[in-house]
Amino acid sequence: MPHGKNARLLVGTLVALLATVVHAADLPRVTLKDGASQLLVDGKPYIMFAGELGNSSAGTAAQADTILPRLASQHVNTVLMPVAWEQIEPTEGSFDFRILDHWIDVARSHKQHLVLLWFGTWKNGFSEYAPAWVKADAVRFPRAKAVDGSPLEILSTFGAETLKSDSRAFAALMEHVRQKDAQQTVLMVQVENEVGVVGERRDRSDTANQAFRGDVPSSLIATLQAGRASLTPELAAHFNPQGHTWSEVFGDAANEVFMAYHYAGYIDAVAAAGKAKYALPMYLNVQLPAFLERAGEYPSGGPHPYFQQVYRAVATHIDFYSPDIYWPEFQYWITRYQALGNPIFVPEARLEPSPYNALYAYGEARGFGFSPFDIDSVPMPAKDEAEPLIMQVYGLLGSLGDMLPSAQAAGRTRALVLHAQSPRPTQAVALGGYVFEGTLARSWPKKELLTDDGAMLVLQTSADEFYVIGSGLYVNVKRDPDVDARVAGISSIEEVERHGSEWVVLRRLNGDQSNQGRQLMMDPKGFHMYRVRVNAITR
Image (cartoon, rainbow, N blue to C red; front, side):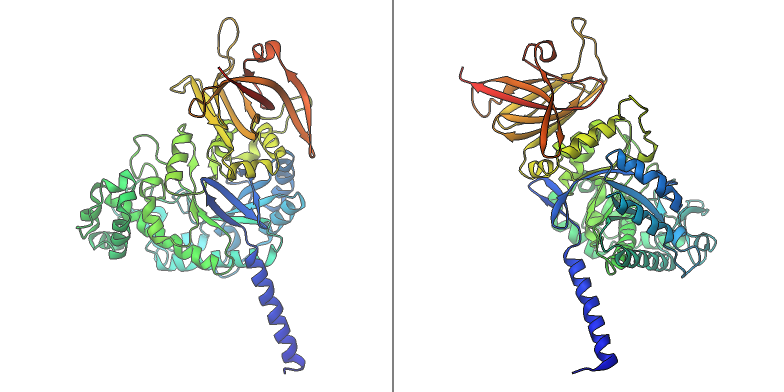
């Protein structure tokens, strides 16, 4: 039996090991089951009503003191914040986490969570967040090059020293978070940011050119061939497993697939180094292609849906992939990510339509998180002024409490979004034997649009009771003909809010406020929660 100093060392080692095991057992994790995405924190579903900070909003400790309390008062429970490589390792091998520590402390004091965005080798394709000692040494840390041989402001995926240094810094970050954050204020980590070559379709450096002329790794061909029946249309259209070189195997898509493969391998090594220290969920975001954009106009080689299966074949330490959606086709991009088996989390979205798209993300896509970009630019309302719309939506969704994740998991939520420019003026969703048909609110009798935007999330609580969060829509309720031939009607409509565990009725809507009991007529300018009770009678 050990005695004295040896015994104390053994006990200390066992205590540290036990703490690590307990910590690991309770780590946040992301699941996808029956179409519902969940982030489990302490074993319970946690829904992120999130926002991503502007790129220059987390560079000082003092910014946390003003930004985080304001966001907490705006119902933002999770903040996505950049952590820059240049900030934590200004001198090679010397790390400084004081700014991050303060953000963690302030977030924790306001009962908020954080998602860290690792701005390491790449951010929006470029390498502006790498430390000065990296950017100043293009021999040790080579750049990607243009077709004319000029160096780009983009570090090359073929830089062995760059990968080694980024991996070391990311591992140091994750180890520090593990030691600092036993309370798990930090829930997830994004590895790099919107990677891809900008301005060129691929890296044209000598090393890259030589690799491009060589054979495609047999392991990649075998993986894609094994899943050929489920390849995306864009990848399937170009994939020729009988070829050898990148051009032979991937045809016109060879440049972008080549870059996707090398970004995936690089990022996987960085993620692996971090997970070896602290295995929080890690994901990749991407700048999505706009309509008719070519690779290089958007970052070529990023993990967008066209060629995401290349990443999945290589980047085994990445847990899931998430879209940054700034284009108007919000629903389209969500379905592309669902088709690839991703849990739904939107880390960046254009701020203006976010109140409407948030309802779609939580209600129709049954996602666990949605995050408008530049959330810290949302102003606090003046006295007697209505809250900004995203605050209204987050406040209402948050008041649902456990009702929302349990309804998502049971398939008891639906949602729709309508805009004045939508291809159809009416949309409908079916839930619980009823069809909820929405159209944008119009005046009477002139029938002029009262708003250009509308959305609703419908949550079923019993056979004849639904809670609806929405704005800007007039909603008819019909019986689902695929269920039975009965005729549906509205029994009552109440505008409600939740105080603790109690529901308080603010208004009972009838008469002109319900089109004589025939429609749910939403406020065209603000979001509210409605409790709608329905009935179905025999014809």
